[in-house]
Amino acid sequence: MRTIVITGGTDGMGAALARHFLRAGDHVVVIGRSRAKFDALLTTVAGDDQSAARAEFLAADLSSVTDSRRVVEHLRANHERIDALALAASFIRQRRHITAEGREASWVLFFVSKYLFVTGLAALLRAVERPVIVNTAVPGARADAIDFDDLEMRGGFTFARSNAQQRRANELLGILATNENPDLAYVTWGPARLVRTSFAGEVGTGMKVAAAVLGTLLGQHPDTAVRPIIDIIDAPASGRAAYRGAKKLTLTVSDHDDEDAARLATAVEDELC
Image (cartoon, rainbow, N blue to C red; front, side, top):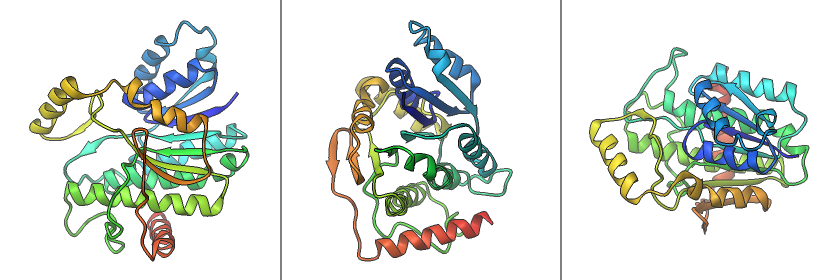
């Protein structure tokens, strides 16, 4: 039985992944903010009497460094291996938001928490023959998208800059992860088109209405959208890769990728001290 860990696993594409792998007979660890949504998820796989026994819920707000570290420590203390890690937590903010910890929420949720999971769970991923991480950070950001001197954008936040920085940082995280474990498959992935989800976040009315209307008219069901992720997890290929839906993309490459990855790790570790 595989162990599949899914952040953001109570809603949208994360919940679709959880449903699939529970039905497939895997042990699924769902990380999310709502126990009620997790309980509702279990009712959708209720035909399998063993599903609930193979499902584990960990409540956490991954825009909190403290919560992210707590979950990582719990997984390390209670599991001997992780076959697949799907990083799918999302909460969109158009404006800079400071958490109770004094950190910029989007940067922590979309990168720092992922950094803590990927580095903190490295030993559990090394315990399996073909480990895989699927990071739903849409690939293709510019190589120079990171402001190493102001990662939390104190000097001027825009949604576009924040989004690009997070995406590029997650590509560099793949360099760190695969350098540490050459057997690891690390995939940055984005859907091929809109997905019908609840669109959790703090955004303007215009974006909410557009997402609701376009998602209804053009969006794919989450169960359909995640089919390429399932295929990647079921047959991982070691090394880094990037996908839009089922289409493999060319990785963003620059002459200083390894240097930037090391610089990013140093900057994040300094922030976390």
